[in-house]
Image 1 (cartoon, one colour):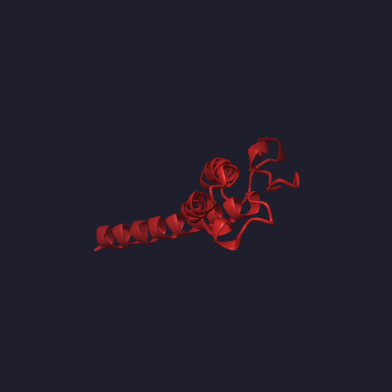
Image 2 (cartoon, helix red, strand yellow):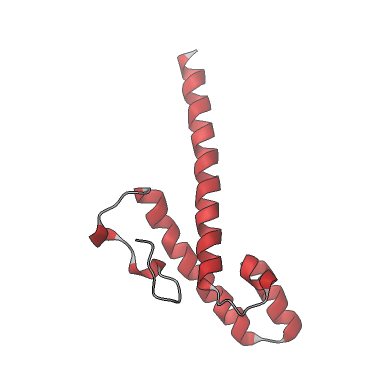
Length: 103
């Protein structure tokens, strides 16, 4: 009985952590994209690459890839340390284009 409860709690926790980390990635990607980019391109990397291919805009494709890499660099910090972490340990790579960090 105890083992089943333990397994259930672990599975629920894993599902929630995947959802939270996905939300962090999505928010960081959107924040890294400039406001003047088309709405679909701000929603996801796949949409941005599709829009870039349709319009022939190589700059948009590059910008989207860089925003995705920047967003992925924020995610490990979120996963490993949760909400609290010392000010000195915050990743400088999690800043958006305005210079604001996730502090």
